[in-house]
Length: 212
Image (cartoon, rainbow, N blue to C red):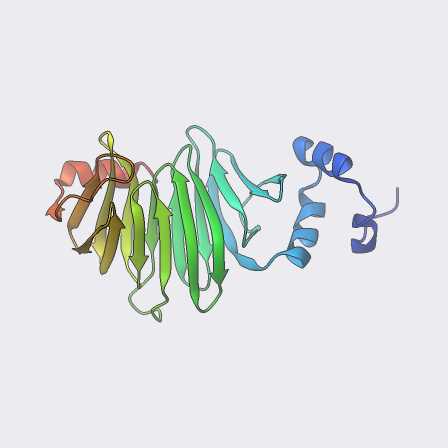
């Protein structure tokens, strides 16, 4: 059987690709085509369990080293986790049953992400040049400029906790600024964030363990 080249890929219809993707056989075919059609946002560092990427109604299973693209929605299954390197120095980790959409990302200029569900951590080392990143979700909107924080479900609420640096969290028409060691909760969708306060070590460990 002859090898499939990039020119051959254009001749494959959507039904064929969907069938191949469902079986896992199209992973090597999908990646080159997606790279041509979409801007690369980063790569997969590691996967535990099962993670998928959805782009323009096509799905592909993610494995270590594979690229992720602007427009991808990255999802994890039950009891699964994934680590992503976005841009040149930003590490994002997602816990079980998470959905993260890469709305916009320029390798050296930051971007916009939407956390639709599940827990995540965002980590950009202090030595890296600051890049403006906006993250949207049930917590409202987080404005990031080089930091390490957690966002997602925590003890029946939606919480944001800063481990290093600072972020601003805006929801319900109100903004709070969190510094290292401070967290906030959003009790209802679109609700106002609570005043910054320290989380107990037990709660911090619970949050971080949900993505490890």
